[in-house]
Length: 363
Image (cartoon, rainbow, N blue to C red; front, side, top):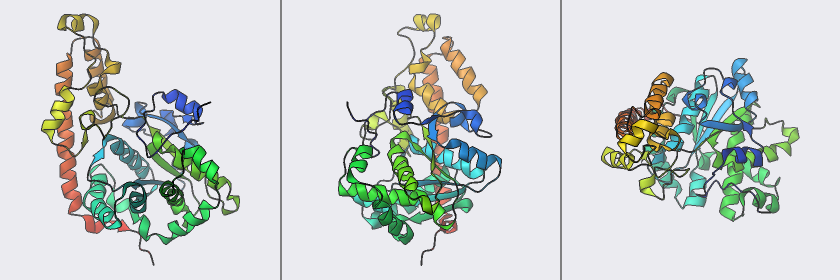
């Protein structure tokens, strides 16, 4: 029997979300679980998670909880999957969560070959301003660098004693030293807000990061005396590749849209993206579009159209054949251009207010 592995460092595609839920013991997401669900929750772009009810109850009962995510500062580009993660962090931040963003400079050094100095420069110049441009409240967000956080490093060492090599390989597929160091450091990062006070926390990520959540939960179960809360998680589906495969890949530049990106390139990419339109206009008017395979529509559904009624109108006009594939692509291009312009302006604004960042001060 082939071992089931999700590789958080790899580029393999995950083709069946229902099978993922079953194979890895995830909970299926229901939008009614959280008050005032955001666009990704309402449209089932969020598909699964772990211990989500714990966080739902904390929100409804106004109890303390935290949301945490990390920045991988390897280059000055992010993708639309990162945008979804930030939008979910923003949702929990707006619903009372203590918000932590860590700069994974040590992980970047051990798995991507980026020096600590380069990682610091990239994160301050690009990633943190990008996260702010995507909606994080700079006044309510706590930042830190892994390499400066001795508590994280000390606890990572202790947590490493709670797993065996066989267990690590069962979760990650292999166990080279860089991966081991990165993984146990991530466990300490995930639990860092609980070092000062035990409270529930949620980690919104792509499902390819679930191995880190599983490892953390396994270690917490073995540290019962510490009384850590098991970390909850929330998983979004991938934004599909422009050629229609399941996941945009940065290794194939024409298959993905990066942030930021020149709109001339973006226009060409969207115009060449997989369409749900029919082969001829006559056939399209008669049969309507195959919306479920249309990538530009999926971009609007996941990222570009906030209003549900507006999206519903676009869907029905396209599904009925009233709207052509070309018209849909032009609409997606116009909305992407608005988004990209606002993102760039938001980055410029954030860079002017970096002095307001709340970094943890370590002794």
